[in-house]
Image 1 (tube, rainbow, N blue to C red):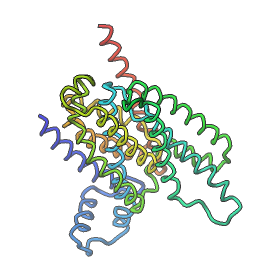
Image 2 (image 1 turned 120 degrees about the vertical axis):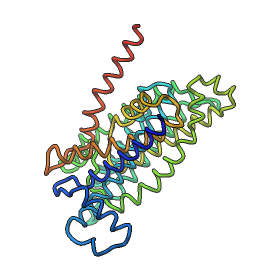
Image 3 (image 1 turned 90 degrees about the vertical axis):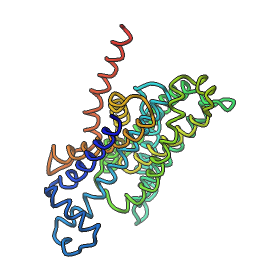
Image 4 (image 1 turned 60 degrees about the vertical axis):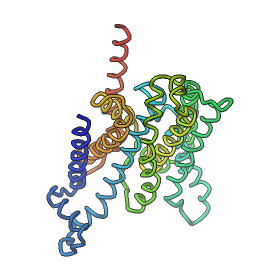
Length: 344
């Protein structure tokens, strides 16, 4: 059953990738997309002629690849958080990483422009994702310091501190929005809603070296997370380095979510929806849950991006709106389902 699920999700992800590359203001049939990609891999320049080739290779392909990476990173981060908290309602946003990254991005947009207002130069675009990435790391470091006492990290304290830090970051972001002008407010709005627009090979080359190693490292925590499902004391007696597993999980989630927010803005609910659906399909074993969540998250975000491009075509809907429209009802269903189980 597990092998069938892995193969099925992999094939579905490949098919969805081909379809996503062909969708947009200029529709390209899947067969033509596959032909262009095969010609590019084989080096057959005779088939790489025409406007559709430029659209596929220079615009759509880097956008879809970034969507696959970010979707996988957010979903696996959600699976890690749910394993760490032993709660299927946990989400990377709970630890304040997304809010911290969003605050740093808002500060970069508003304060950066004001610092350069008297100069002829403009704020370099690369500064924005770098600032968001640093904001995510700083918020995670603060969270880890607050939750760690005598070398032991309290998961409950980390959860509560994450909520508090997220609220503080949200308040400061609101203050920056109040101080911003019309153009800065528009940039802040689109950043907070999330988007894969503006994707390029340069942006992909910046995010891939960060996200890919994280995705490869996260499954290494599967055994430790399986042990933590029994409780911290039981995991310790099984020989699992509990504190090391918790610290590594926090660091990996911070890096993955920080890089994702830095690249595409605030995209929510992927970390809740995908791991829970995968858990319902194959069970709670993290050896399968983590890689399958990566595939599921990649598919969800690419599918949401297709919807974002088609719903208001030829314009483009922010992808965060689509994921929220999918994730919010699902989250409410989870809450109602858990409440009913507790009542019984």
